[in-house]
Length: 405
Ligand SMILES: [Zn+2]
Ligand SMILES: [Zn+2]
Image (cartoon, rainbow, N blue to C red; front, side):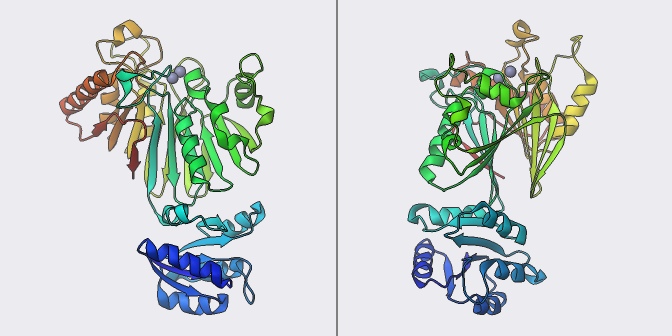
């Protein structure tokens, strides 16, 4: 990338240049914000890294001036400042900054942080793919035995997390290792069954003051999502209560609705599962990620099958870049499990084909299924899709797998 760094502190400037150059980027440095405003349009960089507290013209003013120029619309702007106040972060964002990093820079993660902010990619990562209960052991070595957790990263935006099954421990460890300073995480719970919430207390960012963690989940009648999360941490079940979370917490009960967070939009839909369970559709930069679990699509001829619901669901996930969905059972396993709230291969394949999704990712595997069983389930789903003449890429991703969209 072509990077233009502006800072009145020559030591920071030299360090930023050295770290970025050693990673293969082209760097121009500038010690004056006024000169930067003059030189940036000529230099045509991909990204400007700017300090805030500078004489003559501060970083906010520089961002405002750069954002006034339509010819620089594609330019990415990252603030690099010692100021870690929420006010300054918000102000930078409002003025058009794409990201905000805190000094001093961390040699090992700085380049990666810049690349992530500048990237237009949407990154989906699987942290737990089994349903119902964690199943560690030799039978699940390849795909992992953790329960549902999927993260979605969009450059420069808060982290999006779907469900807090045991897989979230891996995500928590990675966030700790990255030492990013204050973070904002938006968690969306499908529903409060244990396999989707019971690892919330082990998500380390919840304990760090300065972090903002939003927990969204389906309206549960008389019980709020805050009460749901808090109840599983009552002292008889767990020694740490919700009051010991140091992060700023925001709880929100959701119904079928649409939420907008900058470039990210979240739509929700009630699913076919005991109690209140929400499916989510994340849309950002033209990419669509659908997280639909837990969900039962009844077989044709079953009196519980609801054609109106199936049509609405197909509309909800239509054209998704990836449909991550409950495919708990192989077809021959399902007749013994009708009414348990989960789906089998043939109905999932039909939904994917009907909605013309680009990718179908099988998810929420039955705890009795080994990696080999899931291989067979995957082969059966691909065969079902082929029979339907659907051009849907199908996979059963393992824990730790990334999907770049
Ligand atoms: Zn489940
Ligand atoms: Zn469930």
